[in-house]
Amino acid sequence: MAHVILDLESLKALATKSRLAILKQLQQRRHTASELAKEMGLRVPTVREHLTSLARAQLIQRHDEGHKWKYYSLTTKGRAIVEPQERRFSIALATFIIGALGFVFSISAAITNRIAEDGVQSPELMDAGVRALQATPVLSHNAPSYTFILLSAILFCGVIIISLLGLRRRS
Image (cartoon, rainbow, N blue to C red):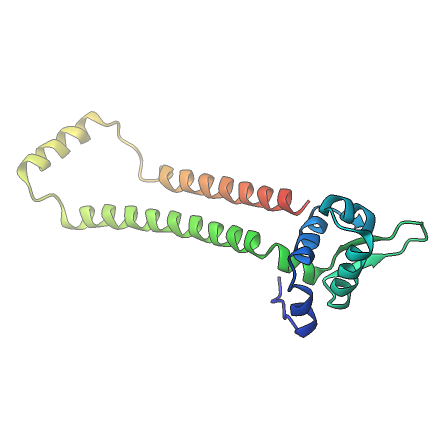
């Protein structure tokens, strides 16, 4: 999502708690002025004044569909003001999960390579290693890396869950 630039009109519109509350109500679904007045405990003319100010700042839009009732909903700019933290959090969480899995995988690979390159120095560990190798069935060198498969599956599930949570919050 693009950055939201707040002009003087937008700042004036956001200067009252009532207008912020209206934006939050409109985040859920579109409302009429009467519905907003009832939910907020304000008079309809007061709510209309707030709606006019928010519309001038292009934070909401009025839908005149030829009916008696005029509905109001958030514009893209208004939605970006009400919901910025959710998107940032989802992106940060996804980035963190990917980074953490990559870190764990690279550390695991580095430790395995170091042991393979340096060998085991202690005679006790060498004997334990030999006994462990004798007790372990022989795998071919072409066997798949289960660590990589497991981490890929976890990453895939994490991305799906984060995407579903993002879609659920938007609707």
